[in-house]
Amino acid sequence: MGEYTSLIDLLVALLRLFGLGESAIFPAIALLIVFFIVAVPVGIMAQSRRVVTGQAGIVGEKGLAITDVAPTGKVYVHSEYWNAEAAVDVAAGSRVRVVSVEGMVLTVEPL
Image (cartoon, rainbow, N blue to C red):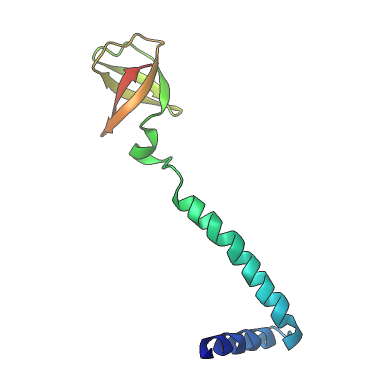
C-alpha cells in the first residue's frame, strides 16, 4: 500500500508545481488511465505489424518486368527499378512477385 501513497504524493507535488490544487488529482488520474488504456493497445498493434521497409518488406511484393528476365533483367517493384533474376524466363510486361532479395538483386517468379 505504501507504493500507492508514494505515487499519490508524487502526483500531488506535480500538481502543486503546476499551480493546481488537490481537487485536480482525480481528473489527472482519470486522464492517465485513459491514456494508458489507449496507448498500450496501440503500441502492441504497432509491434505486431508486418515489416514494410528494407529487404524483409519487399519480399512478396508484386511488380512488372521491364525487360525480359531470362535469367537476368530489370523489374519495377515498390516504385523502384531493380535488377532481377528468375529461374523461369519472364517476358517483358509480365507481372512478377519477389521471392527473395540478395544484395541489390531480386529473385522473382511470374504471377
